[in-house]
Length: 225
Ligand code: MN
Image (cartoon, rainbow, N blue to C red):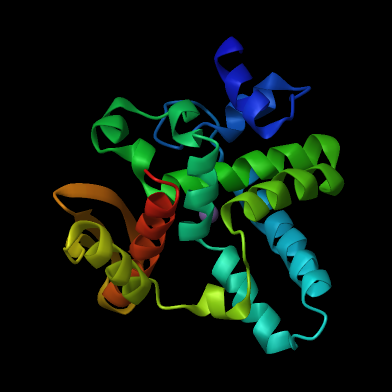
C-alpha cells in the first residue's frame, strides 16, 4: 500500500502487515467485511495503560485521584483528535462517499477512533514498547507542559483570552447535532472564530462538547494553524 507510506514515515513505524494497517484505517462506513472497530477497542485499552504508566512515573507526588483526572484529560476523543491531526491521519482514513461528504475526515470521533485503531495495530504486531514510544512522543510533542492544572484548565476561558488578543473577537459555538435518546444524548458542537471554523467535537452535554472543541481550537491556534 504505497499510499500509506507517508503515514508510516510520520509515525516512524513501518507495518510488517500492510493489511493490518489498512484495516486500522477502515471506517465502518467503508463497504468492507471488516472495519477498524476491533482494533480501536484494543488500542483504547493499550493507550489507557501506556498513559497511566507515563503519568505514574512523571508525577510521583500525585495521588490516585489526580492521576485519574490527568489521564482522563489525555485519553479522550478531543486529545486523540489532536494527536491524529498531528500525524495528518484524516487524509488516510478509508470512508464511504457519504461520510466523506459529511466531512467525516474532520470528525473528532472518526479521527480519534482511527488513532486508537492504529495504536492497537502497532501493539498487535510489535508490542507495548513500540506503542509507548510512538504515542508518548506524540503526546510530548503536542502537550509540552502536562500538569494537573493544564489538563483541568478551562479551555473556553483560555481560548477566549487568546482570540480576543489575536482577533478582537470571541469564539462562537454552534450546536450542529443532537442525537440519542433523552437519557443518553450526544451533542456535536462546532467552533467559529473570525469567520473560520476550527473543528467540531462531541460530548454528553453541550458544555462538555464546547470544552472539547475549545481545546482543539486552542491547540490549532497554538500551532499557528
Ligand atoms: Mn474510540
